[in-house]
Image 1 (cartoon, rainbow, N blue to C red):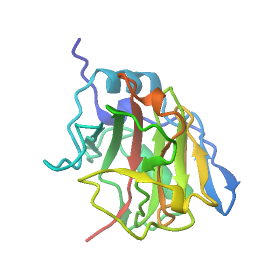
Image 2 (spheres, helix red, strand yellow):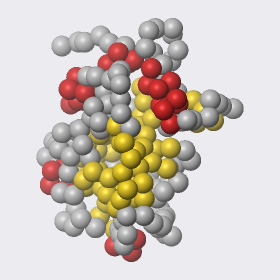
Image 3 (cartoon, rainbow, N blue to C red):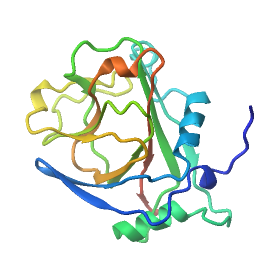
Amino acid sequence: MTVPYTHHTLFEINDNLQIKEESIGLFKYLYIDNFYKRPDEIHKMFEQSWFINWKLDAKGHNFKDYYDCRIYIPLNDHGFLNENKTVDWLKKSLGLDPKLYCPEISTNIFTWINKPNTKNIQFWPHQDPTFNILVYLDKINSGGTALYPKIPQNIQSEHIDIRYDISPIKENMQIIPSVFNRCVIFDGSIPHGGYIEDHNKYSNGNWRYNTVYFFRWQN
């Protein structure tokens, strides 16, 4: 069934959101429960949509050992009511520089084709230039986001393989737990990556869904 929608309506955030702080090991992060007003509708959209590949390479493992996909949902200014509600609220609540802007919602859509046989195989740790603001949107919630005290020294291209054996860097690693419709916010300079507790749960047609807001500097 075709369903017309505007992005700011489907992805509208709830009113009266509460930001809470959590400490885990060496790290701190913020979280907001019940972030979107219509999380079940977003989940349904993700389940029924086509998603294009991300970081695909003929010599790589995407679409061979896993499906790693992403779409970008533009946050354009057309003058509609509540169109800038999410960006304005995040800027105000986090005390972000007014010159920062967020042009789109990014999505992370993932599942295994050939699942690893050990929890030490996870996603490559990486760093982002500003706050990492992500919302967990699958209902499996096996894992979340790993925070690491250091970045791997032997970085390879994620276009080739996103899998990484975290054995050398997992000491003092901490996991932000995935909770459906929870937004988590942390310093993007902290080495981090997706973490799956039970790889079996994200295979055989079961997908990991996130949305992400990246704020950037105006040119």
